[in-house]
Structure formats: C-alpha cells, structure tokens
Image (cartoon, rainbow, N blue to C red):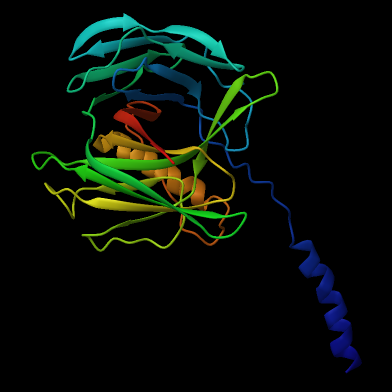
Length: 290
C-alpha cells in the first residue's frame, strides 16, 4: 500500500508537467464596405456608406466621408451623391426622385477597397380599399383599437407588403401653440379570408401575396392603447424582393437578439463586394381620425 501511494505521488508532477497553456489568436473578419440605401418612391435618396463593425460599436468611427457614390437610372449615369453629416453620422444624398418601374443602381468607391454596388427597381404604391377604425374602451386607462385594412393585390406580379401602425397625439399648450407626436404601435394582425392569423404583438407585419394572389384581402389590426390619442396612422409599403427580404430578416434578427435560445437569423444582403442593401419601396400613410 505504501509503495502504491508513493508511485501516485511521483506521478502527479508528471501529469502537471504535461499541462501547457496556449493563446490561440482568433482573427476578426476583415472589415468590408457597407452600403445601405432604401429607395422610396418620389422621395430623396439617402445612402449610408461605412465599414463593417462589431454589433457593440455604437459610434460612427466606421463611417466613410470620402467615398464616391454614383447613381445610375436604367443603366445610365444619373448623378454623384453629395456627402453631409446628420446627428454626427455621415450620409450621401441625391437630388433624384425615384420613379415607379425604374431600376436604380448605386455604386460606392471606397479608398483601398473594391467598388461596392447594389441595384433594385421601384415598385408602385399599393392599391387599397376601405379602411375603418373601431375604438372600444376597456377601462379608464386602456382602449382597444381595431382597424380593418383592405388591399387590392395585382395578380400579374409577385407582391411583397409591410404594414405598420402609429398612434397620433395632438395638443395645445398654454401659449396656444399646437403639437403633434406620432408613436409606433405594437399590434396583432389577422386577415379574415386567409388562415394566417398571428397571436403575437409586433411593430412590423410582413406578408407576400402567396395565399391571396389577385384577391382583395382584409387585414385586421388590433392594438391596446394606454394613452388618449386623436388618430391612428396606417403605413402600408409595397416592397421588392430585395427590400422585403432585407427588412423582414433585419426585423427578425432584432426581435431574436435578446433570446439566447433562438436560431441565428442571417440578415439578407444584395451588395456586390460588401454588405448591406439597395432596395426599393413605395410607402404611403393613411390617417384614421376618431
């Protein structure tokens, strides 16, 4: 027994001597240019050019101020976007108002990198039907808002939609000056004729016409409002394949960011030689007054 104990004591230093520490460097992915531009029908185009960064980098240290950003309409050069700073961030602004049906390509030349570019077309505004709002008082603090929204879907093309809801509050101060505040509202959605009801509240609702192509579905938006409001605004956007996939995946990624058990969501990208999105949209707002 004593011999066995002695052998064990002699073996312990041998095991310890075999332990070695290694510092393995894990390189970060090389920075790449990021080009983001969501083009809205009949609105000034504003692009953002930066270098890719970690999610926890909140400053504009990666914003690029000396990029050359070029705009092409249906294959022909249109203009060079001008740089400007807003709230400490660098943007590039055009003078062109994008037209429905036109295809726009945006290319950014960044010193030290390959040119990055992306392109998309501009969809037309969604054709809508009747909209109505019903407000029900739940208690002295809460009201239940139900809004019916009808869309007329074009059967000749694949359509992509986004719906958002806002509550509008207006007031008059002691000096007689009026004020207006628009706040995005979380809501439930459902459509009476198609079985795609959803139980969760969300701030953005995305859908394609896969289940109602060529028809006129009626969506029901239900929201719990805890403040007095003067009206509700329904924002309806017609999206392209590129803008739909980018906005939808970015929304899902943001929703699942704090859930460690959720599957990873990869944000859609259509930029050549870089990251980001060039996508088209046609957005319109409809205000429903109480």
